[in-house]
Amino acid sequence: MAKQQWVADASHSELGFKIRHLMITNINGKFNNFTVDAETEEEDFMTAKVRVAVDIDSISTGSADRDKHLRSPDFFDVNAYKDIVFVATKYENVDNDGSYELYGDLTIRGVTKNIKLAVEFGGVVKDPWGNTKAGFTINGKINRKDFGLNWNAATETGGVLVGDEVKINGEVQLIKKQ
Image (tube, rainbow, N blue to C red):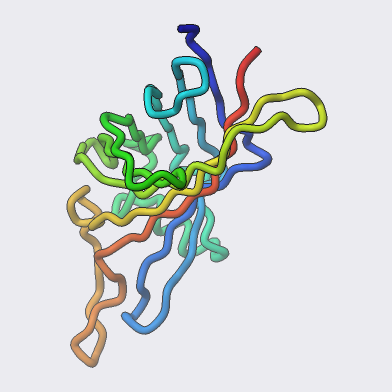
């Protein structure tokens, strides 16, 4: 079988997250710069070797002050840690409609934990310019404290400013390298 190389189509892909704020609403954010490198046997993504590298400095939540705080040592500490890295380790079919679970090692702030992501495979198509593309919708959740993202502040009512659970979401289009 022939090995195929794939990379993220940056203009048609996004990686985001959602976290509770004051425990009453969610704050959404995204990372504007990331790479996805995948190698498959033919076009079988169940055989894929996948590595994702996220440029932490590209974080965007719609608030410059919040983004600056997230880049600080209180959270991601971009001066010490440049990337968030995910390396796939195992795939499991959930059903026959293209849904599966993707397991992999996620590294944030030098801490690596195995996580599980729900993946919906959208299929493989050729675009109008002859490029072969594959699409994926990705969802998951992690506890930020598992990765040393411990900063928080108490509210006067006894609650906290930032929730522990981070919901991960992504829409990724891969393009086959020629």
